[in-house]
Length: 55
Image (tube, rainbow, N blue to C red):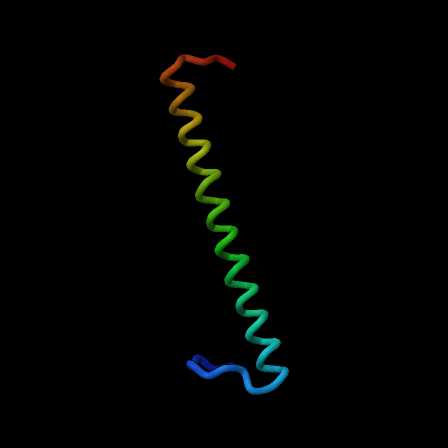
């Protein structure tokens, strides 16, 4: 499937398009999870250090 503004015109193009969109969705979800897990860890460590919490 080429890069254009045209909609898929047959079943194979539609299948390719759906797979591409699923891949993009998966990458976006992975990025969001990675970002928020990193933020959580960073802020948890910062909180622990500021409150002198020992585990």
